[in-house]
Image (tube, rainbow, N blue to C red; front, side, top):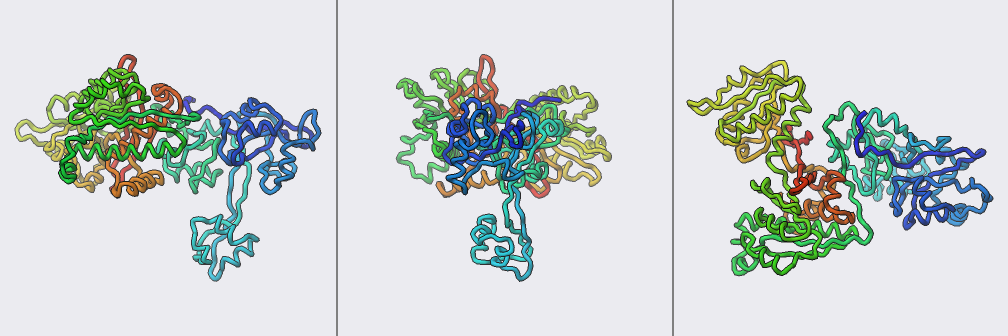
Length: 618
């Protein structure tokens, strides 16, 4: 079976090693302020031994992390009443997190030997009550022997309980039940693509990365009911999708955000604010400039990213430089050696100036824009945050090969050189698939410049879906071909693909695009329903009294990603090898050429749905 990089099996090991009637190991929940060193000392063992028992837990675990420790009542060469943990348990009985094997069956780890094939984890489920007509808060609390305060705490989603207001049919949690569940990792790994939860990971980050829904995750992992409330535990082994649905080309390597102790980053931001030139210009006049809006929005996104990073304990020293009109101030900035001591440079906005800066400084330079000259930027210190257009073509071709299932394939071109090259590239790629043989090329008639609908329908199948790939960005050709697709008979199923949703598609109503399952390669994808995205939008609006633009989100994503990677204490290029990162709407999948620049391969395959929402297919 294929081995995926992230399936290095770690987590909370379950083992017991019988000693009379006692279990030698028990589960322990880390309390606030505790370190592994503290726990090791109280367990009368070395820190190294404790870490070996808990390979997925670092030296400073989060509160409520479940770890394995020796049973305080089972010790070699010491009496059972001298345990420091027992002393803690006696002096703080109500708060003790130790699961004693002689107190309850649910607190035992059930295996009789140390085994890497099993993972034991503590989960919480709830006893519930469905509100009936005539029932009151008082009656329910008396029935289950709980206080009103406990009922409120168990049901934060129902704040009206405070005012004794209930609704018939309301399902209330009335009791929390903790139990230890043992998972046979070997069996799970045979059947599923899995993920072991690490610090700071969220439901949103996992579902977005693996392109699954929260509902799908919950359905596959009924043993973890807290997923419903977006709660994860470090070390959880989650089933992501059945192994038969994992494609050979899937390479899930998720970059794990880590923060080095006392992390500090010096950031230089080079943007064309053109402050001196705009000094006497009215603000309304300034913001008629597209560039001024782009730069301002990018900077506002950067500010929020820096604030977010600082709140996580990372020191950020920011130096902002105005590069002036078309980067005229850059030579002066370089001459003053102003960038000599920084850890990373974001900017400038102009491609030719980015190349210049990258050649002159001794640190990484992030080019934050897309430019038609991206492929010409070759400095070894330059990091291109936007994917090159040539990558879009490869991404589309690979997606089609991965998902081909007998569809009829048609390619629409416009007889121009760029379109011809794209057609040749797609055909060359698709024909590497064993089952793809016939590919139909359709271009406008030489005489009238149009493509008649019959030229499509004559080639299309009514029994199987039809794929129509657009390689033209000519507005007339695109509009004509789209109209033909929209007017197809209902019995013909079609899905239209393109490498980029450019201006040629802007005049077509989205409802019509949805009707033909319009699918395109994009360097951004945003899930507006996710809590994380909503939080970002809320913060941005609160601070700037406006919703974030594409450039504001780009400013946030690029800055946050780079600062977080540097906060790990590792070389930036080394972090790129650790995996892909997904931020608010951008994917960062960096690859460095041996003697050249670093490029971002982070792309999405996006499809219009009938309700005008967008789905990420890849």
